[in-house]
Image (cartoon, rainbow, N blue to C red; front, side, top):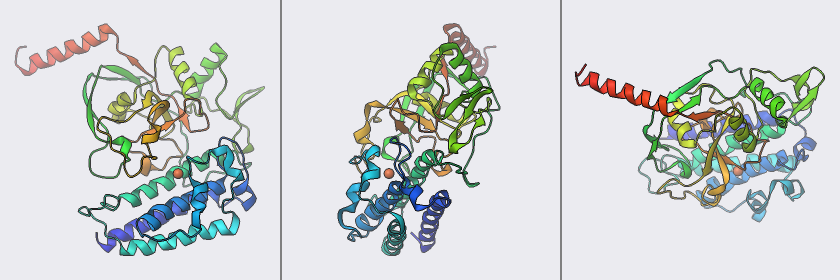
Amino acid sequence: MTSRSKEAIASRLAEARRRTLELIAPLDDEQLNRVYSPLLSPLAWDLGHIANFEELWLVQTIGGREPLHGDLGRFYDAIENPRRTRGELPILRDAELRSYLADVRERTLDVLEDVEIGPDVEDRLLRDGFVYEMLIAHEQQHNETMLQLLQMVEGYEVSRGVGHLSPGQASGTILIEGGSYEIGAPANGFAYDNERPRHTVELASFEIDRTPVANAAYIAYMEDTGAEPPMHWERDPEGWVLTTAGRRVPVDPSHPVLHVSWHEADSFARWAGKRLPTEHEWEAARDELAGVGQVWEWTSSDFLAYPGFEPFPYREYSAVFFGATYKVLRGGSWATARNVMRPSFRNWDLPERRQIFAGIRCARDVSAERASEIAGDDERERAKREGCV
Ligand SMILES: [Fe+2]
């Protein structure tokens, strides 16, 4: 790989870091260390974890160097340290934390100068710069988790660089015809192990909503069923208000509903006479959908390995999570970096989680009559092509 590509990697690493630092710029050390919710890490943990993950992969693994702080890394292991415990850990804080971020980055750039990156490199971590792409995506994905917490910080203003919610425009449903669909990431280019291998699935015809469910529809559902409001909503005499960042802003009925659990998404869909799409259906319909990138969309699918799955570069990224415990979310939210939103990207989370930026898009089976109508259309199309009519 040419030095120009290395420069490109360095500048993308810098860009991701700029965004991270911009998110925390308005905060003081006390706010970085504070535990706002047992459901979320203090920001100081996220920051140290971002730097430690970088040190582990880009300095220790790739560069063969020793860590700066001995076995400090064990406190930044996400699996070993559940979120509710992270505020109590002897992690780096304040000035020490800031210099750790900078010192690791300096070493990363040192190592980058010496490595060989390219399409033909034998080391899969370095081939096409995989490990650098992984690190950039990791930091960007943590930015989203940080935003989940930042909206609990009194008076916090989301900066201009970050996306925002907008009202759904189109409505109605889209018909996706049954057939064979290619699912998953192609063999080349960056993707996580769980998106591979690309494979064919057979889908029956189905209908899917053009846009995610709006707050107005969710309020109708709450009024009809007595269901709980989404996280961060409270009732004022005038109506529902959003209470993020210590403000009280009327809920916009046209915005997509956000901060609902899988269970809530699933019962909303049933109430509406519909169902959640499977993740395969979502991916097959992906190009037709409006409002992607506003809210993560819960699917009915468990987080399972694709046939022929191979863990890479480490089992703890996906393989240990496969099973019926986690549900897959697709798309991406206003807080997700565009770089992360591949059509094949699979997010997964516990079905009771509400703090993530998740909403709902509904699907439904196509009725037998409609299916035979479609089949009839196909029949006529074929006949037309073959010159029978
Ligand atoms: Fe992480």
